[in-house]
Length: 139
Image (cartoon, rainbow, N blue to C red; front, side, top):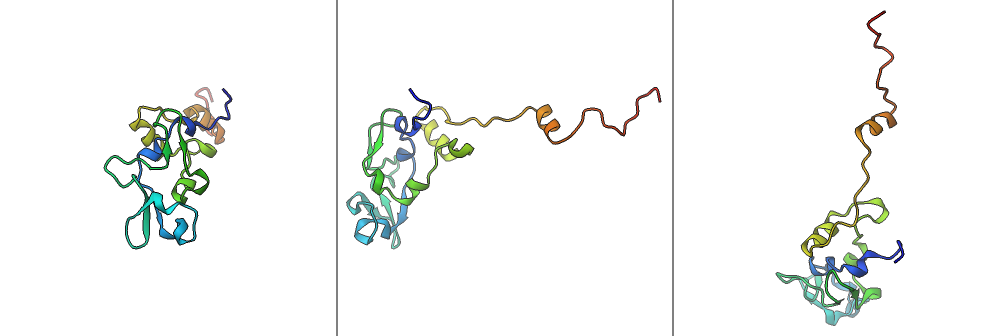
């Protein structure tokens, strides 16, 4: 398997963990692209993907089971929250919401940022272990 494989195709946890709410006009009956029949009203201005406003959320467009082989049935027409949700580690940034959703399904975090040791960090900032201004005891 290639290192370039998107880990989301073996996850889907976010689709079965969060409410997906968005501006009503993103639906195709409001001029957008999200299939309106897969949404439900949340309030006057917002809609949700059907199934995501439940006590145990699961997007109606999620195909497969979280943690297995999954896909989005409307990937090209998905709403803005789905387009904007970055997986943890994308561009070197931790997404705690992604890791939290994965944990709910027993999946490990996707990204462990590398933290330098204290000594590496200290030295990289120009510090020295023996400052110049300290004289040795024999002077």
